[in-house]
Figure 1 (cartoon, rainbow, N blue to C red):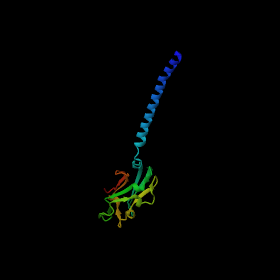
Figure 2: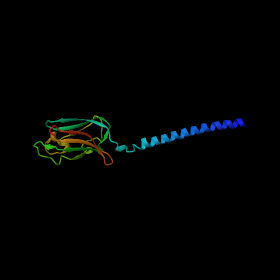
Figure 3: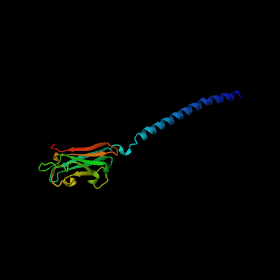
Figure 4: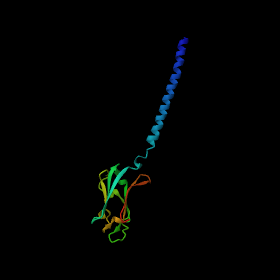
Length: 160
């Protein structure tokens, strides 16, 4: 009977160590899920990553094109086009043009993805007169569902 007691005592420390290791692993995995999953709970508020090319055509159409080169697809309802310092070709200021525009009202698609673009022109902005965008600054701004915003691309005219 004495031999069976010795075998029982030897197993108890091993089981204790195994249980302690299992509890430690369980706690570590719970903490990891909490920090990595719930820490990124902002989901739709995370600033997208996107690369843009800009092109200015100083001809009869006077246009600025913002082309989505690569990166995340962007929901146009969260994008705002900000135009400032645009002037008429005669040099007069255009306060009705220099403002914020909702991108989803300027483009047909609901998503701006790689290969798509936004063209800023007289007709896009409904200026009613010929524009000189060479003096303008054009920004594409992404707005989170909270109160933060991020400028994704900014173009300033060569006349600035």
